[in-house]
Length: 279
Image (cartoon, rainbow, N blue to C red; front, side, top):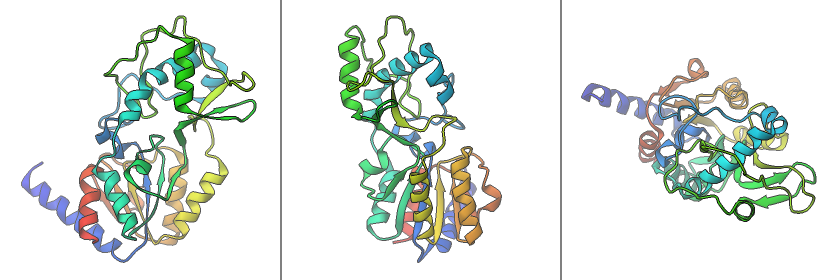
């Protein structure tokens, strides 16, 4: 980045801070906030190539694809769980403690906002920490399912260095011989507690996100391209209320024409800078 661009970025961040000063700020975050923690996005800079997100139709209807998903998810699980919050996550947690941030609505399933110390976090797309039985509704800790997988498949070797996707998946070389875990209560089909492509966000989560937005007087979109409709719907609600809308994302987003300020830079740089200016 040139000196002139650095100066322009600083001025843009300062302008955003002026619009946000004295406001209760809600955050809508996407995969871009976690790329500096080693979890790539599906789109844009840092996206992992060769990886398409699993659709719910494929998961339910294709046994081979479901097997591939589970072995890939298991191989990536430990590396995914080792990911640490980065300065963007930390800045939001500290701003919440200071009363500047009202809460975080995240499209991510990595749990890094909670690990950073944010307390009001709405995980609209769910979390990789839990696994659900689609038959009886039993909820399992993902760590317990990992134990079951290793008992069913003792031949599995988990590599130390794997290429993760945003949902903790990796690309397995083979699925031959892999036994998919089942519910220990009813032997029903299991699914991570995440919203797959083609699924709707549960209404209770979306209503909670709307409630947080209504109680806030500004919105920052951080690290989301807003390709998913649920995110756009939330931004539209902020737009109708004419509250300040700041977008921080390296790539263009669907809501850029509505934003008061767009900042084409990384969240790990911009959010700590905003935190400093809003002290």
